[in-house]
Length: 330
Image 1 (tube, rainbow, N blue to C red):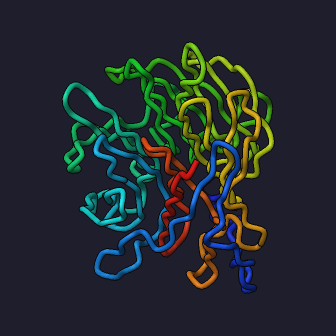
Image 2 (spheres, one colour):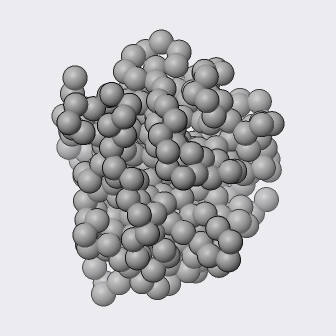
């Protein structure tokens, strides 16, 4: 079975050379309780250089600082909420950081990340210092000799439970307790409910009591719901290629690689789409040059997340690096 990473590379085609239809930069995107203003030119480029390929995740610390990934030696980049560059770390992580979560533990905050190439879940301090690394769960009997493990997503439960989605590998979600003890796995390749074709992103859904899991089952074009034991609870249809999920209040946010971001209401119905790119030739394409970017339109949303103020940040999968801020206006 080809890994989802190979499928992604094989499915790549050069972007359309026609210009993207322009979207009014000043227009309000979204509707109702979710309306946003696209903030143009907000992110500082260190040394005036391009960020480099943005193919990872987004997280925020308690100060509101933004953390996101590139495939360069600046694997984790840190900015303040106004877009000022603060620092970066992780030359040893270049080309593989994919999903991140920041969690407060006692008086300190820690960054949890997965690395597709190293096949690890890592816990680090916010300055980048490594605390521990959790390798392939060979006890799952899914990986002969530890091969084929390429995790893409991480979620942490309220008691420190760890959930790792092997989106570019064997297609399972693995469960660990707060002490990193392996508890079990669920999913695996397939199209039927409970199975996956690229479980790319994963999040804890705090809208349910008790909390549950949402998995972005990308190449099956859906989200799937599970309890913390891995029991299947349901399917949410209607996506193109969902990559990540974030939850805030009664709403869920889905980054769809095929050119848009979707917000779901408490019933998991579509509340609004944001930044939908009308040019299909520019959707889910890594090689879209800067001159074909348009304010108000995404090309390949790989990760989307709200900050504590409800502002929306979107990381497009793009070889130059594209991170967009949308300011909440309502």
